[in-house]
Structures are given as C-alpha cells and as structure tokens.
Image 1: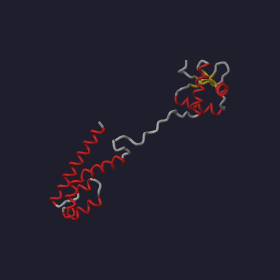
Image 2: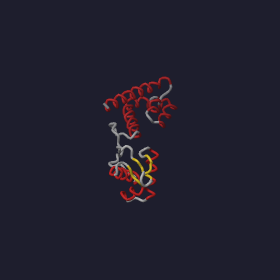
Image 3: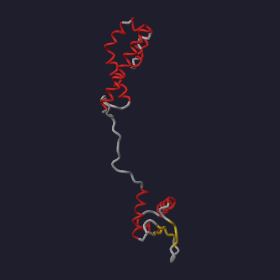
Image 4: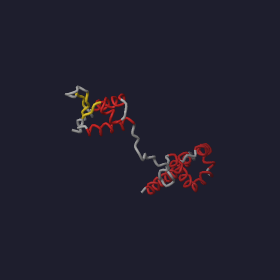
Amino acid sequence: MKAENNNKDNQERLLVSYILSAAWFVGLGGLHRLYNGKIGTGIVWLLTGGVLGIGQFVDLFIIPNMVDEHQMKLRARAGLSPLGVPLNQPAVAAQVYRSPQEKLMMQLLRAAEKREGKLTVTQAVMDTGASFAEVEAVFKEMLKTGYVRIGNDPVTGAVTYDFHELN
C-alpha cells in the first residue's frame, strides 16, 4: 500500500512537472525545474526562455529522473528509505527506571500489608532499612496523593499511617 501511494505521488508530480514545462509556451520556461528543486537551473531556464527552447526540449526526456530524484530527497529529509520505510526505529526501553523513592514506596506497601495496613515511621524504618527522613518524605508524598491516611495508635499515641486500600 505504501508503494502504491509512492507511485501515485510520483505520477502526480510527473504530471504537474509536464504541465509546468508546457508553461514555456507563455514565456515561463523552467517552472518544472523550480518545482522539482532545481532552483539554480530553474532560474536560468526562466531568464533565457528555457535556454532558447533547447534545454526545455531536452528536459522533456529527463523530467521523470528529476521527479524521482526530488522524491528521494524529500523521503531522505523525512527520514524514510527510498521505499518509504523509516530509517531510524525509535528506541524502546526494555525496563522502566524506578527511582529509589518508588522502590521505597513498594517496600512500605509490603511492610504495611504484613501489619494489617497500618505502619508507624519507626516500623517502616525497621522493615525497609531506609532512614527516618526518607521514610517521612515518602509518607508525606503518599499522604498528598491520597494513598495513606494519618492517624494515632490508640494505645501508644504514635503517629500511624493507614494504607486504607489494604484493609
């Protein structure tokens, strides 16, 4: 299907090029060259009447090559091979990077699961091996996003983080 589209585009460009070449009869020789990216010679043809008509006549035979060459340049600029296949495949990550904070969140979830969905900072430090500051920072982040609720232990009064989705 891609090849059919390329062929159709090529035929349309070829037809337009021949129509622009016929503009020589009204004094506009070289428009087909400008259309196909041959700016320098297109201007020369325009100013000299298609090099007195000789260049215009010769171009009737080389217009198909000009069209093909221009199509190849356009494809190359778009990052496609001559057949329309992308040259550079996008890189796809095989593994997603997890930040230390995300890893700590997972450890906290596992620890809370073992303790019926409730966890204190001290328990979290003991279960994860992370520092108090790291655990508190992650708890605050989880509190902001709604993953945990804050409360107090009725017996000790310690601040507890309730993972309400685990209950």
